[in-house]
Length: 354
Image (cartoon, rainbow, N blue to C red; front, side, top):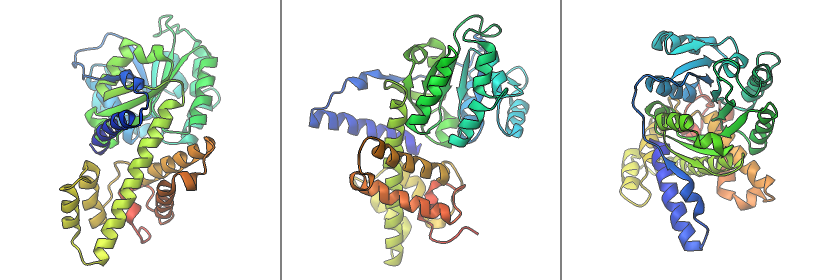
C-alpha cells in the first residue's frame, strides 16, 4: 500500500511538473491501467516463474489464483515445494532447473533479488536461463508450439546489467521485457503492483502478458528501450528511501526533544506531508519492530544504484543528489549494524541488531 499511493502521488506530481515546466507529456499516454481478470481456468498453457521470494511468491500466487498453470523454480527448493503443496499439481509443476522452465514455456517471468542471483540463474552452465533458451531454441518445440519465447524480468538491478541480459536473451532469438515493479510484499500479494517496462513492445502488448500483469498489478507503463524501466524504478525508490530516512531523523529529533512519536505521526498526517508510508512506518520506527516487507538490504541496493545512475549520466552524484546521497549513507550505516534483513524502516536504528 505504501508504494501504491506513493506511485499515485508521483504520477500526479509528474503530470503537474510536466505542465508547469513545459515538459513533454506523451509518455503518460503509454500507461495502461490494469483490471484484475476473472479466476476461470486458463487454457493458454503453462507459464514459467523463476524466483519465489518475498515478491515472487506473492506474484506467483496471484497468477495461480487467476487460473494460470505454473512451471516454477527457486534456488531454495523449499519455497517451490510449499507452493506445490498449497496449490496442487494441477496448478504447479516444479522444474529441475531454470533452464527447464524456459525450455518448457513460451513465456517466463523472472523475479530475483540482486545481481549475484541474476548472474547465477541466467548464466550457470547447463541449468541456467540462457542454457534453457539455447536448448529450446527461439521457437518452442513443446509447450511453446512454435511461438517465439519471451522472458519478462521483474528484478530491480542496474541499467547496464539489464541491457546486457536483454542482449544475451535476444541472442537466442527470444524476446525480452524488463518490468521492475513498484510495490512491496503486501501489494505483490494483493495484485497492486505497478510495472515499469522497457524492451520488446510486442511482449508488453501481448494479450496473455497483459492478462498476467492485470492479475499481478494495477497499472503498467511502457517507457521505451531496455533500461528505461530500471531508470524509473530507481528514481521512485530513491525518492522513497530519502523520505523514509528523513522521517527517521524527525522521530529521533522529536524523541530527544521529549515529544511523543505517535503525536508526531498524527501531526504529519494532518498536513501536506501526509502519506501512507509515514503512516505505516512511523509506528515501526518508534517501536523498533521491523518485520520485512521491503528488506533494508534491497532498499540500500536501490539507493546506491540510483546514485550510480547519476554518475553514469555524467553527474556528480554528491552535488546533484545531495539528499539522496546522504540518505544512502544512512542506509549503509544501518546495514553495517546488522539490520539488512529487516524492513527498510530500520534505517532509523542506531544500535547493532541483537
